[in-house]
Length: 92
Picture (spheres, rainbow, N blue to C red):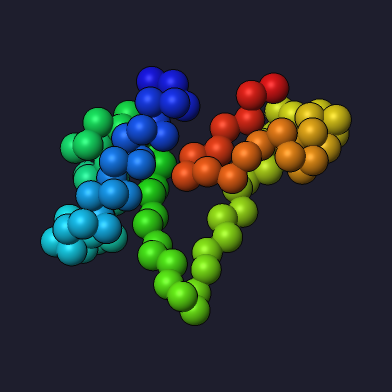
């Protein structure tokens, strides 16, 4: 599954959560089960968390620093090579 397919699935999940309070509650309670059921391929051994922003609380996710990137690659990422999105993938 590529990044574009992941974005489509996560976009669909977000729209469904906005429209259906029951689905949103399930997504917040057990994100891995819901994401998998919606067709997202999840890596084994990874924990997923979903948080909901509000008018007074905004979430900034600080990704783990990649260990296999050079300082130049990290500078490119910090300089905007990576767009804001639900899932941000560095294409280096």
